[in-house]
Image (cartoon, rainbow, N blue to C red; front, top):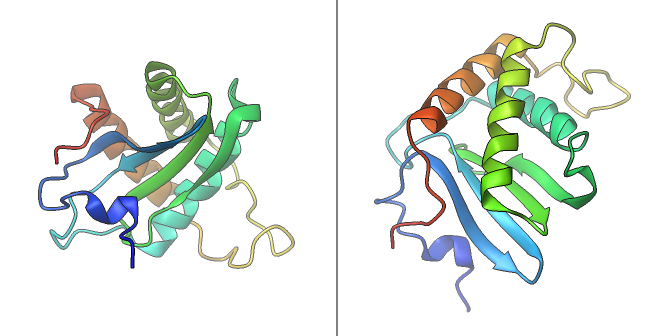
Length: 150
């Protein structure tokens, strides 16, 4: 069986950052890695779910809204995937930082936090989501990368 692209990345070398995971035609998949893999520190589902609701809503209302294909969590709970058509790495980094800042500054209900809008609407916590965004933004302000070390 052919190995999928994400399984060809050496996760023992992977650190927090933003990476181009793959490019398929005009669609770029970004790896927004918030945790070092396999070190025992994983996002809890409430945090992951909250960041997903907030970031997905904001990115789909940004200047790249028409080019956003998907934003969602990694099953391993160490980050998120952002799929964008016609992407520019520097623009994506700037938008990611701005959205993280917007989430940190946000004061209101988590987007999509109702029984009608979400299949697990009780599993959301804005403060947990904000804390995750604070840590990730702080890391992105120090350093970032766009290429995996293979």
